[in-house]
Amino acid sequence: MKHLISPMDLTQEELNELLTLAQDIMKDPERYRKVCDGKKLATCFYEPSTRTRLSFEAAMLNLGGSVLGFQTADSSSAAKGESVSDTIQIISYYADICAMRHPKEGAPYVASKHSRIPVINAGDGGHNHPTQTLTDLLTILELKGRLDNMTIGLCGDLKFGRTVHSLINAMVRYPGIKFILISPEELCIPAYLKEEVLDANGISYTEVRSLDEVMPELDILYMTRVQRERFFNEEDYIRLKNSFILTPEKMKLAKEDMFVLHPLPRVNEISVEVDNDPRAAYFRQAGFGVFARMALIILMLGLKDRIPQA
Image (cartoon, rainbow, N blue to C red; front, side):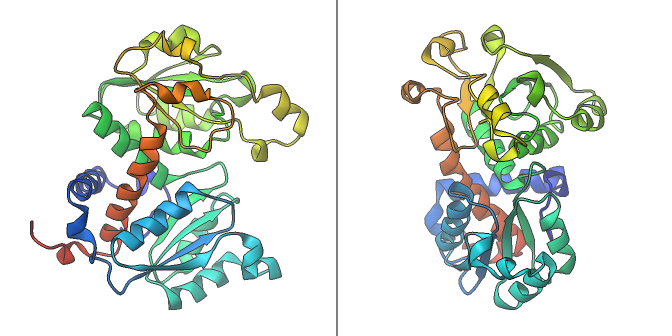
């Protein structure tokens, strides 16, 4: 596991190993508190982030390691014109592993080609967000007890939503998965994902324009925000941002064991009244992200032999 740029960089065996390790960390976090003693994580975030950056930092600190890095491009030498490839070569002298978020698709991949340390893609443009996908898989596994034979509704911005794209790539590996793609026509899933991932793997999916009509079918509802920063003009954003809002009334249509996920941040696509519903799992999901990233760091640094025996 030299680098993690896409969810597909993990084999099925590696993915299962990571999820099993994450669940074990959740059961006994104290056993893991010195595994990364003496190791440093660099967080190179060229784009704003709350959950992803802080969960990476919490993960490394929970493992006994330390953290260095920058929070925005303006606070790094990128503001002076330094390239990603030059930055990562310097970072390689200072840290043992790097988590990178960048607004340009492919930037973490470029970094991986010039790095002497493992690079983790912490989100690149509208392309991929593999550690959010690990968080999502761990959340679904904890809530449903399985990752197969379920209907998953993906709602909102399916065109630019990198979390959606990564989750689709990961979930097609499991049998019995059906996707219901719920979005405005302007924000529907890219054609390449339908052709190269869903169709190529024989995955069942339907595209709809209404959330209400499919709520009773869903085992998981994955909500996403309509992202202002992905639009070319403000008028289109304003016109579409309120297209799909989850309310308590809509939740009445859902199964009792259906769960709502969201990568966050939330704007207004989930009413705050839904937070009180026990099926609202998005805050728990954010918590699971720390454990998923702890497991990833351990495996990418090859530190399983440092884990004390139970």
